Length: 212
Image 1 (cartoon, rainbow, N blue to C red):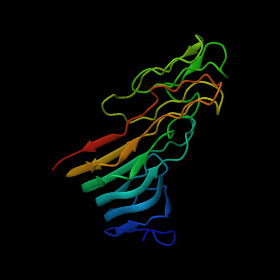
Image 2: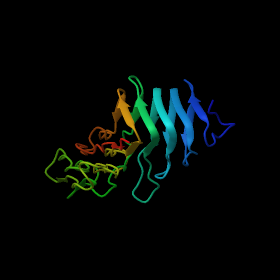
Image 3: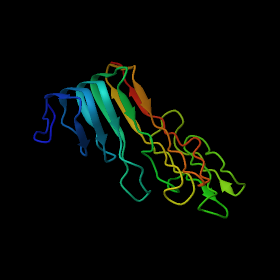
Image 4: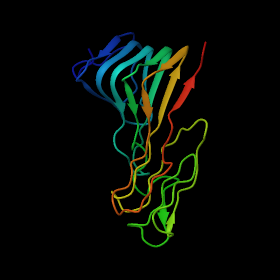
């Protein structure tokens, strides 16, 4: 019952049916319940969050827009469940390639000589991988290994040849979180001949579980 003609209000019980596509660009009201049975939910803007008493992702895909430059607006997936959060088998949260784009980010891959084809992999919680030539410079580590809250950096190379970093996600549950579905935030591999390996640009989703 969430469509383009109605914005859910405080206490509403919201259902997203199969086939629906929703772009969420601002925080929701405190909903009574949110249930996603299918379709696609796209989070855009860093401060956008979906908040409800209970959140159940029973189907469909939650994702982010494509990668961005360091001077552009960043995005993340952010769920806040006052009581329970549930991700059932078959439902997907996919923040892959939702971080920094090629040659962008704190830990972006670089090259000593040829920025087009010899870039190193982007870093995040660890160093990026080396490219195919010795001139490649892997991106360095940054952020937290145990509580990541920053996007993965892009691999070296000229856009769009180099890889993109993985995106960010945050899940907060006041009582319990049950995750049987898929959560992923992989980096996008470089294209052929780019020389921009994107090892370890994955930015893991942060889950803040706070049992009552």
